[in-house]
Length: 565
Image (cartoon, rainbow, N blue to C red; front, side):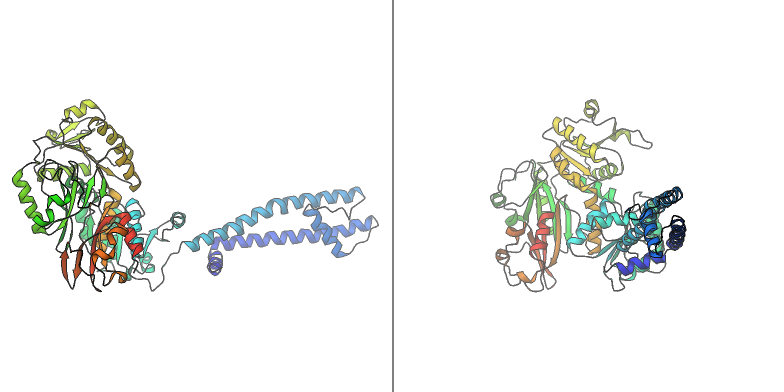
């Protein structure tokens, strides 16, 4: 009932609905006039037959006959009276049984339902709304971002231009408002002056339009935009975008960093103050076959192994966990500690690949970004591409279908240490992953996923690592919101920090039960501005401490659920 005033005001505010009401009034006048006329004629015909009835009886007979109830308690005996009864009955069928339901549905019920629907899709936010995120497009990236915002209890709103689309989002429990995304008044109604961030993931042209529109009145408003074309980056920056994300470039470089090729140096995949999160493959190193305790990485380099990747699965290791040939270790430590690790394993030169090129399936934007990263690192590569394009360095291209064994043979598939599948179509990626895995069980296969829902399927198809376009974009936007530069560690693994919950104050890390209850690992504690990396289990959690943790998405959600304060 709380929506009733809004619904009524919406119904009577429309000019079309006002015109419809005028038609309904005319229809009612017609009905009342006919009932009155038929009642008068009823008296004259009854009098001609020698029957006398009251005026109320005349109205009663007319309404009963027109509504087809026909009780039969009052009847005519002449042909004229019966012909009159037929006329009243037929007009009643047309006016009451056919036209009345149609008029009710069209002019009352449908507008009422439409008004109720519109009341669920507002065009403005309360005037006291602040620190919210305004999203101008709902897509896989922003859908993933919304999940993260909800986990951290941060307010957001999605702007859509059609209220039917807003209703669809409302049914999905997505907070949506109706408005033109290139209209400054829309953002004024959304309290944009108090917003923490505006996220524009539309086309490059529309993102430019949105940015210029907002910059008219809001010079210091944080605006983050995506750019599909590298040529759009400068234009968006000139328009006033606070940060421009090239997600295809970011996705390509992230995939390249996880590839087993080149030397054994660790790849930095996350930073927070002095803390560095890195990963390193161990294939061919002396670490293979040792347990975490035997590796002495903490004692030797000051690095803590916070997790291992085994065929796409992130595992929280214990001291007795054995490091396998396919393991990829996830470290937490300082920059100096990583340099010491790299110096030792670069000295061994054990995991240097003997010149065999890595295969990149697809020469699009992601494939080119991977190739650029490999070129910087002097890693040999070959790109399998169906379509011949202009200005391509054919020395690095093999033209053909990756599902054709002859094309794979031309790309030295039987010797390639890894293959990266970069198509934007998830079905194609799943198909090629399954095919390549059936041909080479020992090859590292990495794949791109456009939709989060296909990540698990790609792992089942045989991918060692999957990087989701949606998750990568969402994390990049969320990190900007939180003033961080942390990258998505890998699909399904996250790195986050927050104020120590009150329920943990005074407890040591060992007694906190964080790892046992949630699966998260505390990799650092910030105390009075000083970061203590890889803290000892005996360290006590202080009142104003900040915890830096690493874990899967499920582990992160478990932590936020178990320690809501």
